[in-house]
Image 1 (cartoon, helix red, strand yellow):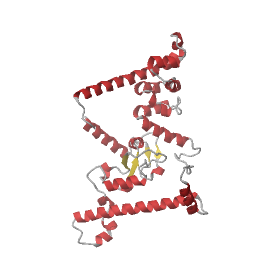
Image 2 (cartoon, one colour):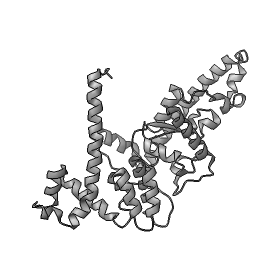
Image 3 (cartoon, helix red, strand yellow):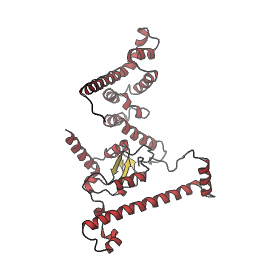
Length: 329
C-alpha cells in the first residue's frame, strides 16, 4: 500500500464518515418502509407506487424495496428480532428469515445479535440441513449427487479406469492413493523434525534412535512449539488435505484459518493431524462453542444449539479472546 499524504488522509476520513452516515440513514429509511406501505404515504404524496417513492427520495432499487419488505413483514410481530434489525440492519436477518417463528424468536435473536452475517449464514445452513433430514440428527446426508463437466479425453480415460466397477469404487481408490501420498508427506515432515530434535539433543551418535523414532520420540516432543503459528511445512501439508478449502463438511469456501482441534494454548503443539483448515465463518462457530465432537473427523462434527459453558475448549477460547481484546486496547 502506498503512503497517504495529509490531504489524502483527510479525503479518506471524510469519505468514510459520510459513507457510515449514508448507511445509517439508509437503514433508518428501510425500517420505515412497512409503515409507509401500510399508510399509502407514497400515494398521498403523489407518487405512482412505493418503488418510485423509495427510488426518488432514498435512492432505493426495486429489488431492495421488495427484499426489505419481505424481511420486515416476517419480523413485524417479533420485537426481539426487530430490535436486532434496528441495531444491525435487516441484512443480518436475511440468512434466518425462512426459519424464524414466535417459538424460536429468542433463540435466533440471540444468535443474530452476537454473530457476524457470514457466521450466522453458516450456522443457519447447518441447522437447516439437519432439520430437513427426516428421522435423523445427522447434519449431512450419507450420499450426495455430484455433477461436473470434464474434457472428453479425460472422461474416456476415467471410463476405462472404472471398467465394470462403479464410480464409487474408482473414487475410493483415488482417495486411498491421495491419503497414502499425504501420509508419506507427513512421515517426511516428521522425519525432518525428528532429525532436528536429535541434533538439538546431541543424540545423533545413536543411529538406532532414527530407526525407532516413533517409540523414542513422542508426538508431544515432536510438535512442541513456542510460537502459535505452525511451520510452513506443516501449514502446506494441512492445507493440502482439503485442497485449500474449508474442512467443515459441505463448505467450499477458501480456508482462512488453521484450527487446532487440540487447543495450542493447552498443548503448545502443532500436530498436523489435529489441525483443520476452516473458513472464517466456521472458525468463529467452533470458537463460539457451537460445534461438538471436535476430536473426531470433521465429518462427525455436530452443530450445537447452545454453547456448553462447561466445555474446557470453550473456556480456553474465551480466555484467549479476552487477552486478544485486552492487547488491542
